Image 1 (cartoon, rainbow, N blue to C red):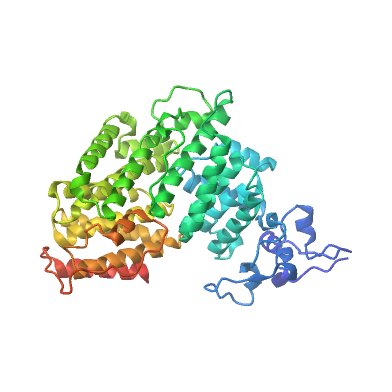
Image 2: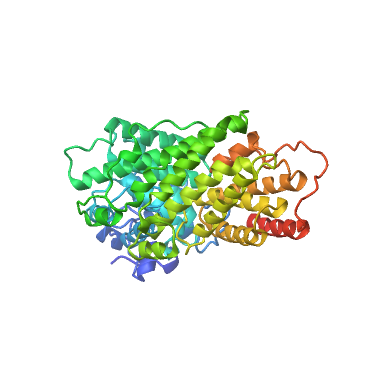
Length: 519
């Protein structure tokens, strides 16, 4: 009879289930009998000498739990051995659909994905990509307070498996690369993110995902939504690299997407109030706004761009005006969509719209420019703060960048006046509170807050020139994952006088909040 292992040396699955951890008689393996019988990944196999473990430097586990929290230094020969037990995997997939899906992208039909996962037909690279995004949010005992480390291990396993399919494009490889690009962006690895985004686009082009004639309803919708996600991800990634985004192969606004409820139920109906249908109409506007920022940041004057600014403002006005009544921003509409499971998507559409407008008007915060349009910038920055504070619905990393831009606008009000100072203070504190929560999950938020600190330091030295769209500032507005230079050169050696009478209290407020965030 096999002797059971002591609790401290039992595998993770046996400890969680409070079962005896028995070696397999007559077999030269570290796997236990329970894991073999239930086809589970045994932690004793993972921690064997063949696959040596390391512990992240910031974890410092005690000898008792080091074996549990440790992670592989390299992806094992069989990456699927890293998959968690089925109950944990189910929890991670549920977290993905609750917190990430239909926020920064729209890739899956949830019931179909769950069914395929249960039948074992979802490729491993895609499974790992999904849980690489969601593991960071888990409090499951399985991760032993090292969910971030597991997220990185899952991302590495996904990349390992996706590499094997690099010249064999499929819908699943496109989806996998998009998800991994999101993980890499959240880690602050802008270049790797851009490469994965490019691979997603290359696979998408080779499959011509925008062509759906003759396909069934589900396949049509998945291809269209994945194509739209490729375009959206590409726009943000281009901004991150400070390059002009490429034009889409097919106009995203011409995609015939089902409404969200109809897609979930797979009902063929004419679109009435599809949220992603409306978001698709703003993608090219985002591209054109980025083009303006690049031109202004590289030497063009605002006078040469004012006609373009006005034209894009008119198009954004028209987009908002033409929204179906149920899609206009209000607490009632948000509660309706939250009730049917699409509150996150509703907020994502509106925070994106107001972010585009705060970007478009940001150059007018320079005191030499139009005060009226500076006020418009502040109005939309306030809306960004309000939407982001709605019930913790938006938790993907790009929200951190959007809030940093919004915060810089609120700093303008606090330091230079020209707006509702009390409301700006409240919005700034709300932004900082959300950023503090986001930094638990996304390492890149530390970098985002760091650049806000650099911006604030410059404001203290040169408040009147801080909003000039110089080389540092236009990258501050565009880049979400890239690391900016720590120093921004001031054109003034002496501290300029502040216009706002509340200099000391507002400076102290910002200083205290930023120190708290960067602690």
